[in-house]
Amino acid sequence: MAPGMRVVGRLWPAWLSPAALALFAGAFVVIWALPLIVPLTTYQHNLLSLVFMFVAAALAWNWLGGYVGQVSFGHAAMFGVGGFVAARLILTFGLPFFAAWLGGGLVAGAFALAWGHPTLRLRGPYFSIATIGVGEATRLVLTYWEGFTGGSSGVSLPIEAGLKYTLYWYGLYLMAIVVAASYAIRRSRLGLGLLAIKADVEAAADVGVAPTFYQDLILFMSGVVMGVAGGFYASYFSFIEPADMLGFDRSISFVLMAVIGGIGTVAGPVLGAVVFVVIQQLLLASYSQLYLGLYGALLIVVILFEPLGLSGLFIRLRRLVRRL
Amino acid sequence: MNALLQVENLSKQFGGLRAVDSVDLELHEGEILGVIGPNGAGKTTLFSVIAGSMPATSGRVLLNGRRITGLPANRVVRAGVCRTHQIVRPFSNLTVFENVYVGALYGPAPARRAGMSPRQDTADILEFAGLRERSEDLPGSLTLAGRKRLELARALATRPRVLLLDEVAAGLNPVESQRLTDLVRRVRGERGVSIIMIEHVMQAVMSLSDRVAVLDYGRKIAEGTPDSVSRDERVIAAYLGQAAAEKRADEPEAVTGA
Image (cartoon, rainbow over all chains, first blue to last red; front, top):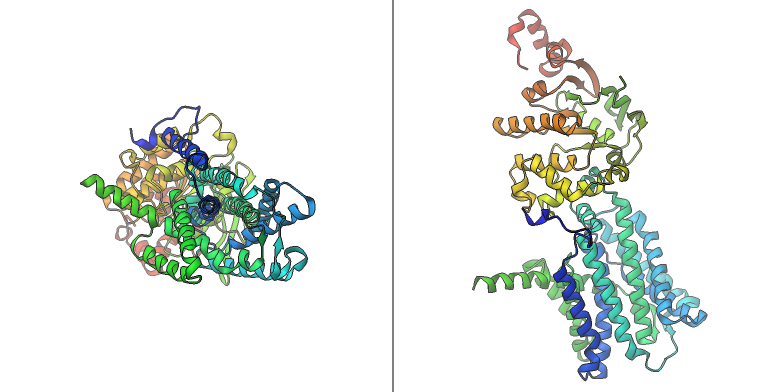
């Protein structure tokens, strides 16, 4: 019998493979215990927390950009909205930070739905162009809305002793949830429907997939994670300002992470985010603007030679090794 | 007996062009209705409107007495009417199995989905359509005949009561065309699906159809058994021109087999 036709027991959903579950659980435990076993410097420890957050954000971008093929150049809008809402929830209502992140995420998701529902009828480059507009408009509104964002001077959060250290684990939980969700979406009924929409919207509708509903749904989910990531970012730096949160290069960074790593895959955006943040950190200190140029070059190389990015490279390497 | 699918006075206007003009059709349970007509007669547009791919300008379509006009395509599928495309549109990023699986997962209405396994259903349909060995392949690696089978299999997976087949035999060689015709016959016989089929391959449509409707310039100009339709003056005029129709009236043997 062909592999796709194996009948799976009822206990687990058909898409869940024990190997993937074991790998996931193993990686989670190792990363969780890492700072307790290996003496990381504060710099390394914090950098990892930031990487976790960006992995989550890149994967969330990929839900829309990779699974449905709707490439968004405006995801910084949700990142920024989530960040500022979370900051306000902490400052004004004194919410604990994780509740504030969640609040920021939900508002960001609702915001995504508000612009996405009409915009997702557009496809391909037309959708992408619309998202540039959405991203820039959101940035301008939030820059001038001083009562909410503090304008270009931004918002500062009270610094809690020891918070930054614990963010490592919160970042890990966020990443773990989003990795698991990415895998689940990719393998489940929802993911198959999204891939069908990506291939041919009308043909998908002709076999019963509701294109509007599922595109709205995945954009909402993507927006929620973006918002939570923005909240995390606010807690991490204790200070946020619109230009940094919502700049066009912020939006581009999410695209780059997914594309460099391998668009549409689960491992891709994870790898992409790691590579992106590490290169950024290495270059930022000495050549602050050079890193964007480097990403541009990297992007061209990826698109020309390996459309599946780093994951595609790994697949090729594995084949090569097997042949030897 | 009431018709399973009723098309009443259906029209579709594109600017100044009436692509479908006040068409009435009835499809009975277990029936195969052929729809023929010259290129540009509005056959595919008729399908698009029935399937909800595009809105009707006026008129309505009833399935079992329930109105389905105005529903989006995905809801029409849920109601039990599924179409295929003349130019096949497989999901090229999914395997053959996954293509059909999408139909099995999303197509059937929730009530009809109870107690069945979409995975098993998909496997059964692939076997039925003769695609079992190709389950794990991408549609791009199939021949045209294979992709036509896939298009049909994917539509079947939605558990339709009415299947709208748009030129399943077009572009195939006579052997392949015959095999697909046999498959369509089995869809009706073994799976109990009622079918409306657009077809240009006359041998296919005439041997399969219980009744044939003829469209020309968006209007239904004739309807009846394959035999009576192929003898109809207006039909011959539409296909071959007025002169041929008149000539045929003089010497009946000159234009046969359409």
